[in-house]
Length: 238
Length: 297
Image (cartoon, rainbow over all chains, first blue to last red; front, side):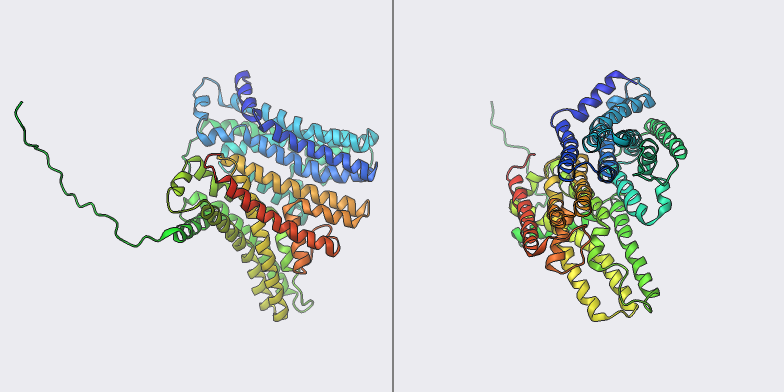
């Protein structure tokens, strides 16, 4: 990890108006949680449905996508990455620094609000908030790593990442049950299932399997991104 | 100093003035429309630019093909398609979102980034012509993306000898609905894309608006309809996402089968859906024109 790279990435990602735009999305989640608490009262199934559908299935992947590709994508796009690559810092180290910022950003803006939304809606009952917070936390790490890799591999990272999040996890997952075993969303939900004491969430993947797959994906994606950055070719704009 | 006769001569190297017909505003706008429409599918651009739109077109058509096959296999049992035409758009809304997110910024942001917009406006082309050409081009591209699978389903239905008249009228109504979907999608997408010269930010912002609003609205609608059992409030919530808005429009105006969790509530709700749909389209048009009064972002 390199402090300077971390600082520059952090400023590029969250400098100016961008932090406020990201914060707006977190505030949206929290305000919906508050509204539901007022309208519905305390209903743990509602909490699980809401956090499952909005936070874990939409907000966390979207944040992972925007932040994960945002830490390196624009630099590759406008070619200014060459100034970073020409410094005597190893490429895997650059990736690590970028990943730290991406993961921290996703955790801060998506996982923490998920946990707080859970607290607002269900309090500490049944460790529901904790379960969803933990799921959002590991999903944030996994999505950041995957989408950072994607941003190094292709210039259309956001689009392909979205195709994975919407078509694979959403559309295909609802028709083809097998697709669900290979989905970050289900892996992280297995953690919720294990932590929450009430039977409100079910995942298609067992916890042990999910844990191993998550670890493999996070480490593997980060390692491979480092390798790909070593042989990065800068293409012109088509 | 003695007078010197000039020694150089200006050679006539054959430059000629253009004396053909000048085609004017309408033709410029038409050319830009055709160029943008082709660009949305990557035609006339590099092979790499063709991959994504063509892939999306293929993915969009695949379920329609499967539905057509199923309709043929089961034609002895049922006289209906497994999925009505008018629900196809909402089922595949993810693909449409990706298409808009990828192609709306591609259509506008490069003009902003490489500062070609002033060059356009130095021609006899007005600002509204530019906006109209881009808006119409993306709407047409989206309409083609929706219409292609619907036509595949229609051909499949006819081959399965389902009642032809019923199928034709259903298809025409669904195509009308598709027009509303494409114009709403194109308007919102282009408006967001026109605000940034960075393609990446444009893509991310469009995705956030469409995908997050749809997920949030659907989840809230489901909870309010089934847990609170307030179907009217759930119906009103559909106004907050472009996808459920256009779906409510076609449910009420074109009598389509709704794909949203809750349809527009009653006649008043239906009228409001129609008004809001037109207001959104009009607002996108007005704001785009306002945006292009000034060239720089």
